[in-house]
Image (cartoon, rainbow, N blue to C red; front, side, top):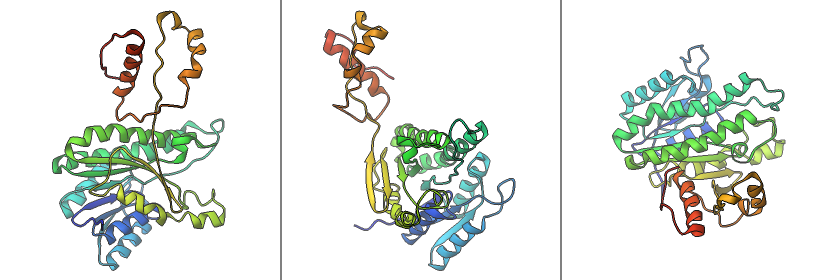
Length: 309
């Protein structure tokens, strides 16, 4: 089965190098018209970075179609203009890969709130800006594929990256709500957690590992997750040729009777409450309420059958 992106228009943020560049090149090879976004040098985000222009040139030399964009993902108006320019040139926008990112790593004790807010603004708010800018277009055309970029730090934690981790787990949460709201419009949203040797990570990897984690090895997962037959609400890890799925799961609820519903009663039941068994991956927040009501019914034999969370 061949997967192509003919007649699709794709926006890739942070596409001047690293993962974004590889995504843009492969999308173009497979027929997509690509907006290569990478932050321009001027204060207001206008102009085009040399790296973005080089990617566009590479795509065009290979016979593809692309345009560069130097807007900042942190500026919603610039993202609106990026989408408008793509629509004016090519008629729509079908795919967005939210890839732009920065690092300001420090322990939380040494991190300034400016460092915290800046990283959250680029990763989380930036992805929301791009997604919001394209959302109505995707609803109107009854087709959209969005990919958020999380990380192992967001999913599992990493020393010295409180700002980055908070933003990245926030993106997984954004995915979970948008995939519900977009479902009736054939908008599918997924999350990728890449491990790659890029400008952002070259100081973190030993030289051999840096080569092993070539960004090109993430491309198969990323492009499948924005293809026509993509799943939705998936979290996929990718790097060095290895791929896995991740889930937000919960166990069965333990319902405590009135007389047990104290701090001491909770402590006495902690082993059962924290048991790593009978795990399930809810598809919406209301399933948490449902799990609690199910536990209550098992004990009391009464109670409503469902509730919203």
